[in-house]
Length: 219
Image (cartoon, rainbow, N blue to C red; front, side):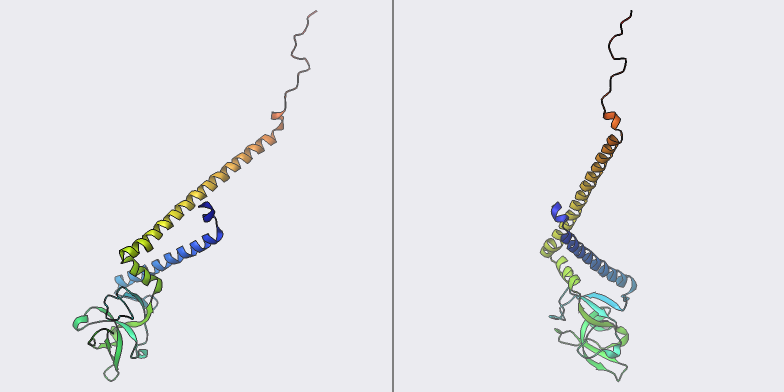
């Protein structure tokens, strides 16, 4: 394990993957937090929504996470997928992602939309109801969102990797602690050697006194 943790390539790849994953999760949670606390305000002109129904299959499936960009409504064309806030009929008060099937520019620019799998069109909307144009799915976040809502996917693709990351972090901490203790011991040993070498007289044998240790004769 220590050899793996000390491998430079492994540490670089592991660090990049870990922090990229963390950054994406934080960014996604930031979007969700801002939108839910500010009435779906955008961040730099972008919003994130989750598909709740199958009306747009197979283009967008249930639980797909999509990125919506604010655009000039005059640039919207028939065939574009847009997100808007419904205010009439079955979609009153709901955020809807459907496809533009007709644009009426004679009565103040009104848009008619319909889900791909729906038999009927939505009530027409005005420009002020539009949140923006769908840019597409957000790959990593979309995968995570699908995984966490599936018990098997959550266990194998979220729980197990999370446990592995925690284990590697703990192992790295333990290895680093051992290295630090070993370095500290080596420093102490070196200091002790320096003390011995700096006092060479302490290690020399004592010489006999000039008077000697024998008893003196008295005449």
